[in-house]
Length: 523
Image 1 (cartoon, helix red, strand yellow):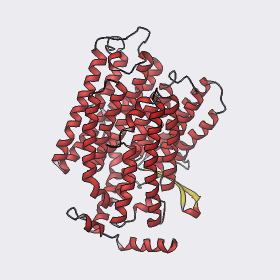
Image 2 (image 1 turned 60 degrees about the horizontal axis):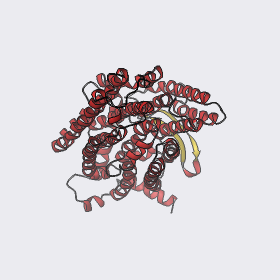
Image 3 (image 1 turned 135 degrees about the vertical axis):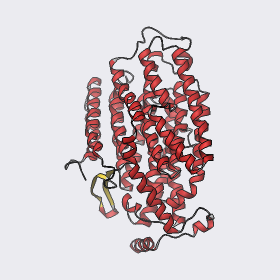
Image 4 (image 1 turned 120 degrees about the vertical axis):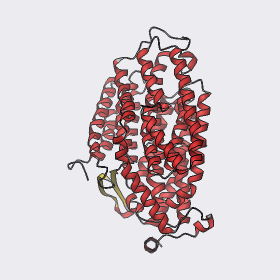
């Protein structure tokens, strides 16, 4: 459905694309910045109808569907559910904030920079809204080029190394994903994601399809040990690039697990779950330990993302409503909190021209407003009670302890490490011996307050009143987990089966007949 006949989701994708083309004909940097800011504000306004999403309504809402390439079975199919709603809203919010945060930082190739921001916004919304597998892949690949350019053109001294590493890692994952898409078309007979979700597949097919998709999504998250591209990309990217990378792009991987791996390959997901839980816990501990030893503030936050995203993947593969609810909530919370921290690091770098902790100490006395907001985001990052990250992390831990207490105990040190490295950073930046402070730096200005205040408000709003978010996402989670359980039961899967026995599990008869029909169509 559209909102009162208006294609809300299409508008959110098309408006940035049209604006990106229009920017190419503008000559003044000020005009480019103001136009992009206006488009960002318009995106936020256009996304407001999505707040009318009805949790207990149809599985997908705000649906738009039209023929695209009917001869190949491809459709232009968009829609929103509880898994994608908040990520679309967060993407729309980040555009104007990134423009404001880069107002003085970006001085060269201003037009091209803002074109990349607009293209990124359109691609990311498309990824979260696509209900056609090929359309999803088109948007998934489309975001690769503008993100590569943001790092390669406006990044730091090692930007070429970081951008190429990011591109190659992501491209490798995309190749695996494409292979899985083609396989689902051959076996399922369609590119429609909702239709593919209604079918069941033999375990052998699920095994290889899951493996291809899971590797693609694990690289994007990135899960340990595929994380090595992330610190380099974060450190070298401009502030806006780091914000988009942390707040939006990393969530594409976890969203892929939720949208495709669980509903399409439920038996394989259950088989691989112990391994992925172990890898998630390893990422939580590893990210925390490495972050604890960093002296570069931006690199510290980058490694902390490895640990935080480990909690997200852990929650997903617990296969419990509480665990998955916590995971989706942490996807949103991590975007808000880490996005705010990267923005503040960018503002600090504009003043001190250094990201080293030793060069940015003792700012509490001279920049109290800056340190107040920095403290808010830091406390949120360590999941302090009352902040947004607390409720998400607690839900994941509750799901872990309910499923297996040993998994819960194994994840607890990650929370302790987060407190250690964030409190160490906060203590030194706030009260450390002043090193390079200059009166010319100044505290937060009006533009900077406007940039950071929305994220600061969300930290406390979600932290103190998370019920609305949880109520919105739980029905979609319940649908996915219920369908997953029903498919596995219909196949005769149980946890004590050996791998050889699992490989002999066939799809139910109805799906087998569908496969025969596809085979006749494509001999």
